[in-house]
Length: 148
Image 1 (cartoon, helix red, strand yellow):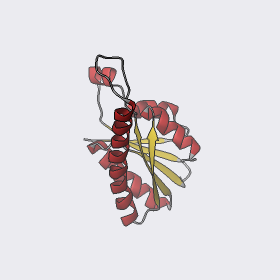
Image 2 (cartoon, rainbow, N blue to C red):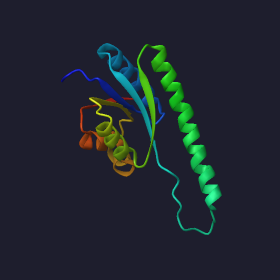
Image 3 (cartoon, one colour):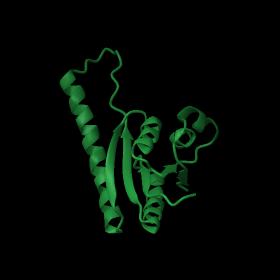
Image 4 (cartoon, one colour):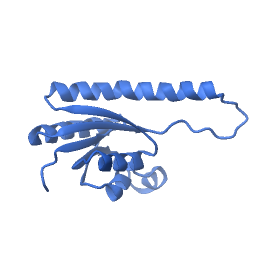
């Protein structure tokens, strides 16, 4: 594999992501690569229910989700820069697997690094695996780092 010049680290802010972050920073530093630190969030969905969600309430909920994610991304960004790695953060909207793969393509990432929870059996069937979907659709190699 050719040394990547741009690495996309995708995080869901879990313990698995923290472990993957360390790997992504190490690989970026060793290769003199730029590190893109990304989080994909899904905007709140509004389902027809008895409860009414006004446009203002929806916007406030969406803004709060984005601001919370941006704060967590800022922590990763600071940590990467403190370790001497040129970095940028990206807040993506949409289905995580689609947003990550599309961003890797748009940003010409040479590698995606992400954590995985290592679910198997029924848990994997019902909860799915963002990492496995990214692996099957990514335009570049994907390194998954298991939490445990």
